[in-house]
Length: 158
Image (tube, rainbow, N blue to C red; front, top):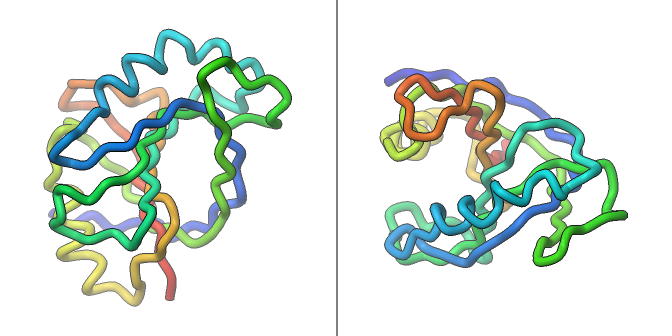
């Protein structure tokens, strides 16, 4: 695997969605998205149809620690926080420098993340930054399909 990312500066974004605390060994991603997807149309001021799958770590990411807890979000970008559906929360995603990887394949295949953190990052001119990690699930995202496409956004600093 040799995927070269685009280095992008992300502007601040406002998100509305649902969140759950989990770890990789206690993965609740299915429950999170199962509760979010039927209600996403209640977000009336969304900026686009893209979905954000975001991980917020309370402490620095410990690579290989499958028990590290984090907050996982299922969210959409919004123009403002005027109308927040019941049982949903707001999040301000601070802008900054990101390595953006275009990924095609199953979302359950973690080889891309092994490549990013064990091959690309150590050989790049960047360090991992302590900001949210996220995937943008756009029109070409198809859950459970090997031809699914998404963007993986990894926070970096020089």
